[in-house]
Image 1: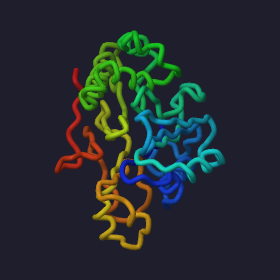
Image 2: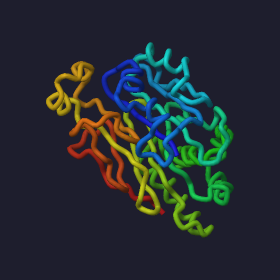
Image 3: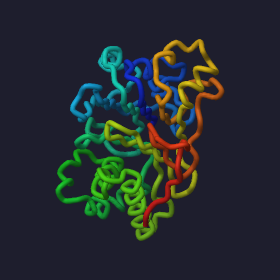
Image 4: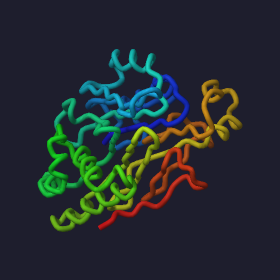
Amino acid sequence: MCRWLAYSGTPVLLDTVLYRPEHSLINQSLRSRLGVESTNGDGFGLGWYSADGNGTPAVFRDIGPAWNNRNLQELAAHVRSPLFFAHVRASTGSAIQQTNCHPFRHGRWLWMHNGAIGDFHRLQRDLCMAVDPALFSCIEGSTDSEVMFYLAVTYGLDQDPPGAVARMAGLVERLGKEHGVAEPLQMTVAVSDGEQVWAFRYSSQGKSRSLYYSSRADTVRHLYPEIDYLREVSDDTRIVVSEPLGDLPGVWNELPESSYAVVPSGRDVDYLPFIPEL
């Protein structure tokens, strides 16, 4: 499987989040503590939005491991962004190639995934046939993750992100049952339009991969005033991660099974229930 991170809030240098924490995503690429595999070295990717950009994200992806990539380290030390994705990959069988590295981009959208569609080779044709024909040529790689993305775009990601992901998940579950796949879907997904981040945790078996979100910055500042970089970020700055970036109590909260979070939420609750639409 994989590990990923989504940041939204006050613009920061990417290395502030990617490299500096005690258990950073770069550290997780070599020594994951909660993943299925401890090593995630089958490629990596970054996707980021510029504060003064046109809404279309930039993407940098490579097939080597993140822990020793000098270009990644150089870029992270000089790029500042208010919203970015980072992903380190452990392949579940698809080829190790740049077009299979996350995040995936379409227009203003970024998408990344940890998990798998069970017996994807049996469902792949039917799933691909459900993608809008106008979008089909946009699929560049061979992963289930990218097909999931373009199904969500097909099902209305522009108008209703939670609904589009629910309809995508419902199709995977229906086709899985038709093909005799008992547990067709395992996913933690992050998707963004440059304004908000939606993070989903769901699996057919009810035992999803790990996913955590940070507490409000003002809460963490109160608990740990010695953390320097928190003095500069807004209260609604949040990070969603496959596994916590450190061990300080009160900083990280597990996203419950079958739920999704929106950052910034504009709500009194941190998450909402997620149910596939069959």
